[in-house]
Image (cartoon, rainbow, N blue to C red; front, side, top):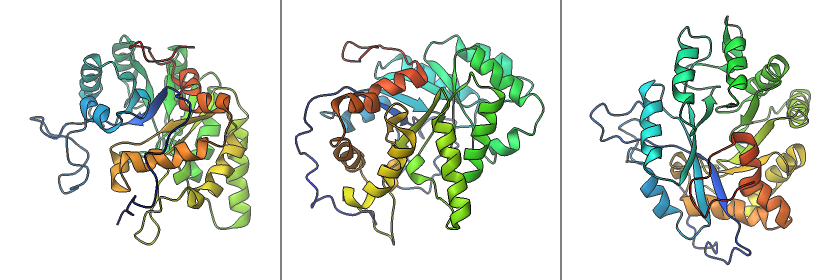
Length: 309
């Protein structure tokens, strides 16, 4: 059960206006003739059309001027479907597709989609019955990731756990020129065993110290005993830990919409992270809300209200 927002002043004045790029949204349309592989039909919260016009309405008045779509389908042609949708709405400044390194046709598909400047990278990690740790044991995966780096594209991770953190370090060792983005870091469950926890935190610090590695403070809300707290004080210790590890030059905003609807409204999740950022300097807020994402994704400015470096 998601907590009511009545106790939180969600419409409090946000302070100086800063343009915001939401670096993590998903697009899908269950009404298509072919349907969608995700979300499932029995998910009453998510099984609704999620397209740019709906995103615009939800974020109206929040200074959100652009978004990066993160692919949520394993179907090859859904990469093209998203690019076609993005072409019709300038709020989408980039897409991160779903191609599988190590497959014989990877280079062909990469060349095809990379011709579109909105195609900014691919997503690997813990999804679609794949894990990055397992992928790295397969022939040609590393050479395909090098091709990704040579194309000046990035790689997003998916659904973080300690094994994924270790795998990203191995990717960076093997392909140091590939920009990496670790998604949903507030959702990373650290081991309860102190030595194991220290090892994961050490690996996160190691990643944060390497060039071209970025981290999303995305999907912040989380349930506790069937209740989703909306009080920043509940999330502050974890956010402080992550900010301390990553630093202001590596962190980015992402909502995980509409997947985030399973825990709260867009406004509720945005409110928590906006309130947290108010304690940071104006320069740090700009980095978090758009500048770092420009370095990570090299997204495409498409509208006059979108910032440029």
